[in-house]
Amino acid sequence: MEEENHKKYKVYIRETSSYFVYNKENMDNNCFIKGRTLIRQLSNDSQKLPYRRPTLKSLQEKISEINLMIELSNTNKQYQEIKDELVLEIAEIDMKLEETQEKIATLNKMAEVLINLKSEDEIGRKLAKYDFDQMNMTESIMLDRLNTYILKLQQELSNEINKYEEIARRLDLFVKIINTNKFTVLKFHENALLE
Image (cartoon, rainbow, N blue to C red; front, top):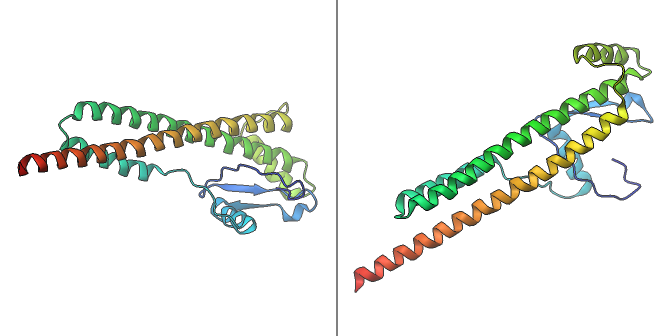
């Protein structure tokens, strides 16, 4: 990313994925880098901690809390329906996120192959030609079209992440409501027993 234009970018990086870093001035500096390393370098450069979307594990913990509240509650049918809806939405969006991320990774690999086919490095060109054949790419594939499609998918990914975060917020709110209701019911029962 270029620092000269002082723009902000939203970048989605998976810790376990590999990314190709392209240096147009010096082809010898082109390299693959792990997502975890890239995140550290970008965080160090910007002096800001990266944003992380809520993990599926933390959402599953909240669902476990809800299940416990449902078991302790008298009105568990209503809670169960709400919980089931949230769980279904989370699962659907998580699958869409994975699918979109896989598409973006494939398109990035294709773009990398196209760039390396024009490289001055003979070994890089041979490897790119091999990847070109392995991926069943055709000569008609244009880098501009790939980049346009990648941008479109990244926008879809951003929208899906926003939906995911909204559902995570709703799940948080739901847990708070259940906890508040449970506390109110317990207080009511305590007061009734004292009278």
